[in-house]
Amino acid sequence: MIMDVCRPRDFLDRIMDRYIRFFPCLSDPARRSSLGLKVALVMLHLVYAGVLFAFDGNLIEETKIKPWYTASYLLLFVATLIQYFITSCSSPGYVLDAMRAANEKNIAFKKASKQPASSKNASVVVTIDRNPMGKNVQGVDVTSWTKMVMDMYPPGTPVRSMTCSYCNVEQPPRTKHCHDCDRCVLQFDHHCVWLGTCIGQGNHCRFWWYIFEETALCLWTGILYISYLKANIARAWWKDAIVVVLLITLSVALIFLLLLLLFHSYLILTNQTTYELVRRRRIFYLRSVPERVYPFSKGVCHNLYEFCCDRSNVYNLEPLPSAQVLEERSRPYTCSDMVRCRCCC
Image (cartoon, rainbow, N blue to C red; front, side, top):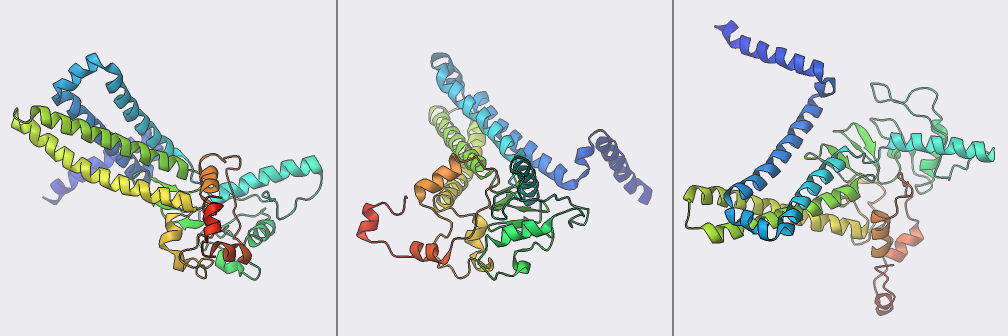
């Protein structure tokens, strides 16, 4: 009896072993889970669009009259899925990658100038690798990286407070170690389960555009579902029941996406991250900053420009603002500030 119970499990294990042999990249359970979520999300999109085109005969007739309308909807549908995969496959900006890029840039600079680079330069001599335990390997000029990171903090800041206990590297400001990715991420925002990656400096802009496209797609799909119910409410009841259930779940998703889009738009305008907003009192260099002061904000226009357009430096290591800058940003607004658009510039 016990052998009969164990046989199906052994059979499934053999199938899984053969599957992993052909696809070794899926041997990691985290990758399999991420792939399963991606497949589920794509299937969810196909179900919502497929039901619409399968049930709504008026939409098919309208497509023959106004093909641009349906073509625009399908274009948004495809663009949303493409943006999803682009965002999920993009790097959020890892600290170790920034160190390697800084090393390569500094070597090129030294060859051109034949002079040692300043520690305050954005580039620094460092070659980093990681062993299975997450520690740095030999042959690394840790001193120069440490000096550069310390220059970004106020004088007297202890090295221990800025060192990651998992990666054993010094973290620039706005950096956090992600336990799901097991890496330190620059301008860490959050780890997105649906995307299977972190959201950080390198892909926050792509993430915002994905949310925007997904929100627009949900809104358009909901309008088409409502139009179908208005025109076919007295026909087959089982079709109406399916459409109503899908419309309810779509409305919940739309509310969530809309709130998420507004929330991240607010973060972009104020140059914050979700982690900084939620865990502000746990970040040692933000504890003394007043609640209504955004220490990294350079004005709405400048924040938008840096977020959307300024991609000349992929790894932008941003130092902490000085006490004078924080004092200026905490100053109450006056009428002259409103005239000069202090909040924008």
